Length: 163
Image 1 (cartoon, rainbow, N blue to C red):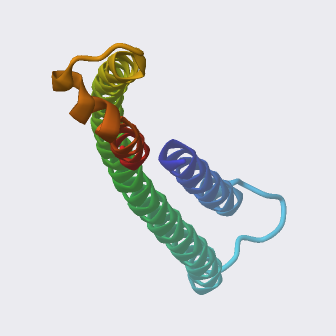
Image 2 (tube, helix red, strand yellow):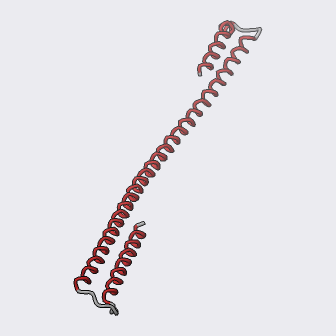
Image 3 (cartoon, helix red, strand yellow):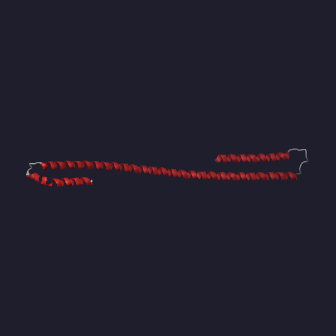
């Protein structure tokens, strides 16, 4: 954009210079008619100089506007870059949180597996106690087991449900 503005400015300046040169050549060219007086020539040259000055002022104003536009674009590009950097930082932070959540879920799964294994062992013990208590011939030492077997089984079931 800046190069285009500079190229336009250069072209405008060349155009002004060409117009000025053509005006001077017209004044200096010999002609068949009577030569104008010095005062008339001076007036023509002053008019040409004023026109050239006006055009140069217009070119300078256009150049300043182009420079302002370039600065605006540069500022917007800086803001965009800062936004992109912030988004990248937030994405990295989200990835870290997701990795941490995955690790915690894995640890919870391991705990649940351990609890399931413990429950299976408790169930085996309860079954063993029920088998012993259900035998028709029991020694006096197994009588308390037979009497408390239903209570033990219920307690084990409640324990499993809580977990």
